[in-house]
Length: 162
Image (cartoon, rainbow, N blue to C red):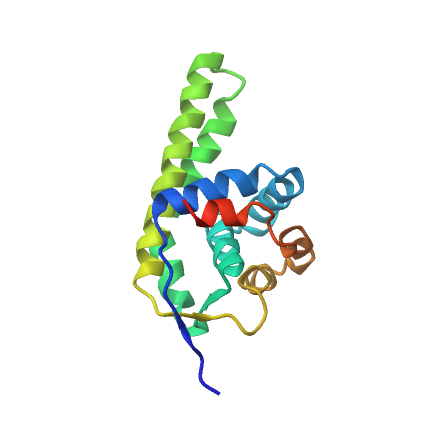
């Protein structure tokens, strides 16, 4: 059996809009934050994997190291800034705290840009095995969180057509 290649048009804007819509689901947001805060997972990676799952695409297991490497450029900065923002939350005026949140959001978007560049450089295949989100949750010993990501996202057609 041969695995068919998949050709997708992934852009930063497409992934960003999908992420905003998908993350706005309360159960998804809570599971993402748990994955990030208790299992050291990367929410942007999880959102990308969900987008790929929705498209019926997968990446080769051998490409995981390359995906993780592309995250390493921004992950340290993003994590450090997020920790700093949390520490100063109670001491900053609301307007400065909102600016800090906006800056963090820009760092998140840059990380998604790095992921898009990485994924667009890989060969994608038709998914035939477990969802990428399940693989990632298992990899982090957080398989129980996958149920929040298992259902198809009803608005994925809108996000895919952007």
